[in-house]
Length: 311
Length: 276
Image 1 (cartoon, one colour):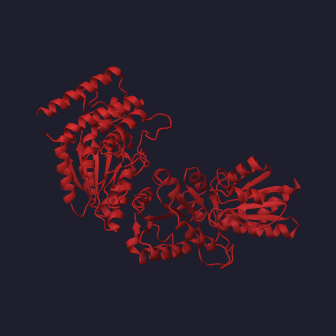
Image 2 (spheres, each protein chain N blue to C red):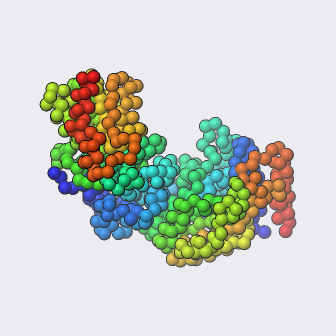
Image 3 (cartoon, rainbow over the protein chains, first blue to last red):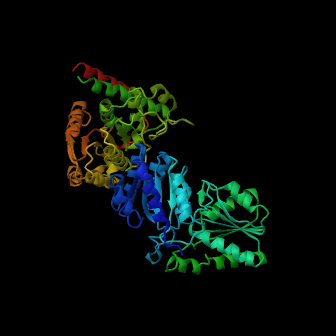
């Protein structure tokens, strides 16, 4: 099991960038530890801004820095930087077209038993609804590195959700297929397409194996780029399939499932099942316990597929 | 007589024309903030030629609903064409909308939702400190706007980082859409509140007086180690008696008779000023 969290990889990539570019700055809201950015703050104190526990200020200050040529990465728990600072993300980042990268750390149900205040199950829907805002949920540490290296090269705002805990590798070190804003095909198949983002990618990768083992030819797609959704890649992968299943660590409305269903229904109508967290506060537990409870694991996904195909 | 003080009445006529031609606007706050915005732009080292210069001074209109005055000032400074604004403000498909938008030359940041200008200006000022550039950052807020919590988050950070390149102005006209600011939500001891956040606070007795404003901005520039806020006591609807100090004129659209009356009084006040 991999021991390196995606957030730690982010810190490494940003440190590498900061060494070469003084305009790369990191902002935290008393969240440097949670974001694994303490090392950045210690190494590049002149390129680090602490704003205290004030997430709206965090985003607006980042936008002001960006408007003066800085390349700010503002990191705060996903639940706060998105919904508490929603208007600042909309007005100061997207609408004003400032190059602020918004990092939502401990996304989804990462905070486990801390409850709904700390869960971000609305962030994909909220952020995707903002014109000009991009939304990315990398699946593992290797893809996280590729994504941040790509984001450092552009000058538009984006929201990136990262989980808190290390996750199993989806890709092999040194062999990480990545093209910006293009979904990554994990496996090919002819009967069923599984689509996921973030921490749900590993479960669909494993579910595809389970299904292929029982003779259900299953393709799996890593849609780390929820917005702009890779429509072309999605339609190509969905072509000829009997069923599409989406899996996300998010509320059942307005997230990956909704967006995939929109594209499929308009272009290649077929059954789409959207697996997600419930429309209620989630059960108390750590991420694995929560995912297992709601069937957001390889076995649960495979079971959903086999039952749907029977029906 | 200060030429700017006289010109303020010409710009008020521009603001009136913009609003009447466009079919709406925030005339009360526009009129109270004319001298403030004119004076800031008169001092700033920014022009249409230097609007992308990294060393330019920055301005953010936090009370974005008073964009009509900003348009008039930007036109006066050559960034945009006043006739273009008057003809197109708020019209279908126009780029001249009812709040600042940074696709318009000279506008740094979009605003309209209140309580954004100060925190964004803090970021701009921080960038100046990081890059050791000596530009200054100005923002203008309304006094009703100060009920937004984000204003005080910005004030906290401005004081914490000792941003002496940052100068905020409060257009203290004592009125907001629902009435007197002290009745709607008390601003109270604004001087003390900003001072508590580590700001140098300057009270300007007449915030529609260009000389008093310039003296305050001079003092702000000389103040080191802390940001400055200028509490400019102004008259809402300044320029014509029918709209002065009336909350109902926050966004009142003058009819033809009122337009003529205001225009006449603006002209009379300008003439009187010229003969002082």
